[in-house]
Length: 162
Image (cartoon, rainbow, N blue to C red; front, side, top):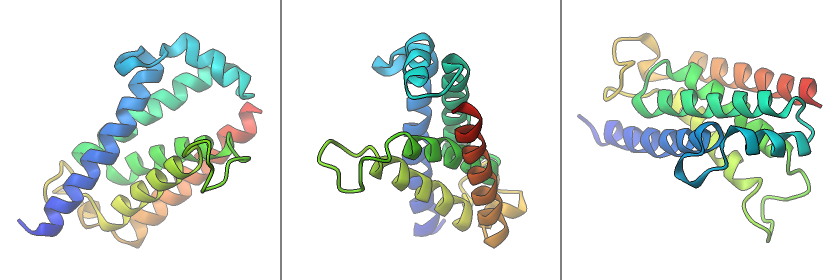
């Protein structure tokens, strides 16, 4: 076991569990979250109609993508789910810049999207459930799959919802 294996495991756990937690807040109201009804109303206010559907889609993408990243299962697909939902998080706050004094509205999803892409590019490593799959070690194909599918999915949601 190398330091790189442990390092990518720590990155996967941090990014994946935080994303999954955010999804659980949206879907179930866990961890002090608003739950699906309130999140759906908020999404509708942001222009995502029907709000409950798109809130559920976002929550499910965060939970499944986050858990997939955390355990290293179907990592390129998990990264794509995370990237797609994070593109939408960036899209709803275009007035906030990277250095916004009002908070990290753009910086948070951008950082997590880059982290998800990095995990796909580097691969989940030997300490993952993907250990027997060819994408265990990442590579250009895994990164391209995650990026293209995530961007296409994220942009489609932005276009269809508004």
